Length: 373
Image (spheres, helix red, strand yellow):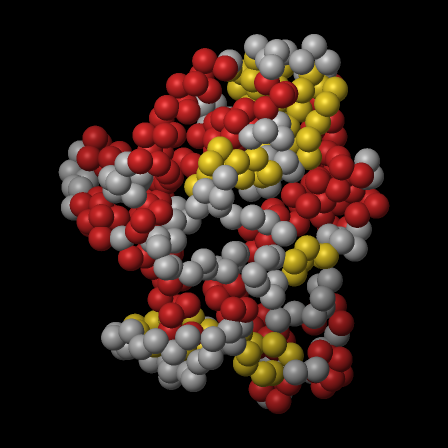
């Protein structure tokens, strides 16, 4: 079971950037994780088993990952195998390059028991005991840098202080931060530092935990308080006031695009979550997503439409929209509607002036999961 501490590795960049985020997030529920997060967690578990039990990814096929606290599962299948093998091979090559002899897989380390710390994906020590490796797996497609990483920094000061792993630091002269990311070119990125850097980072961490300032920025992404944060709202509003009259102003505005989009996404997710729980939000409603047309029975439709297979099929049968074009072109007189049904992929939120009818809702996590795709 994953243990989530108030100040953990995955949120350390936010703690450094916005000291008061945790206070603002008090009593706010965690939002269900999206598909990408679930997939990443599943791959993390596979890598953990491979290193701990000395097995191959192929031997992990059929593993079912279950997200703590949610009725969400993800099975490790053949489709996931290639990515997992790339990750494992790159990790083993890294261990060989650094002459790592002793490893700890997913050690849970605490800087302050019950409050600060987290689980390190891989902690390693070289044969000489002078090189310490702190490695983190990432399964997204956007490159993550290990250079002066606050997340890895917290793991480092926690491992050095925790009695379970403190002995590993006795002769250490070099600390290597590594990001193993199989979806990016090169897969492994490393940054080398020393214990002096950890000393300086420790002071920065201590100051951040004691601080109360709210400073919106890119670190707001995934913050539980983001949809409710007044400072974040003002920050985004200020960005919208930027002009685009010349290249400098346009460049400044362009730099805010991703942050504004992330903020809007977090607001929509929270609106959807609350409204699915039955909380009314003035000016908004839950509606069915735009319907897409599908064949009621593809075999029956193929028999009833008097065209050749060449006209109707590619690798699969044409969609209703594409078939309409073919029927029109061939001047075939047939009512396709008897073979077609309109199906909505789910619900979403819309403003009250939207032409679609509002739907009756219930608190269903799966609906939020689909919206977050």
